[in-house]
Length: 132
Image (cartoon, rainbow, N blue to C red; front, side):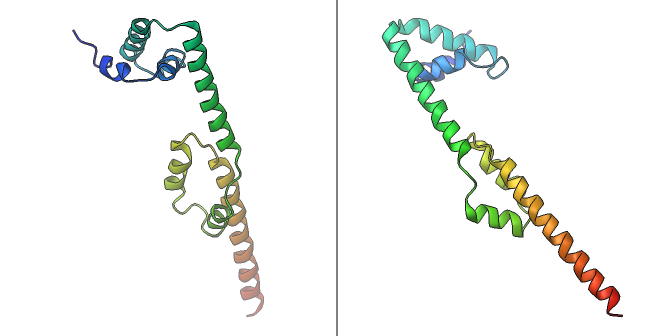
């Protein structure tokens, strides 16, 4: 029986194969791990090639970490403040699909906006109550 992941793994780079093999348990189905191991053995990589692939993985991780540490843009902060919780699920997906976890900062700005509106409504309610 042919493993359905063999073709995918054969087209993957050395670094991608190493990422699959060194991934956390449960990230990939066992057939994908098996196909990655088989493909890596077929390639007979030298220590130098493995080191280059590991460097590529490290660079990719560093880039992802740098992206996660970037602050939320001013326009995103303003949008989250003015429109708390509107479209938040869609925007959360945008921030998490690229490995970006800035949604926590976005939620903080949404809470600021929500508190702002609560205070404004309390002030307006108090003014309306005492102006009778």
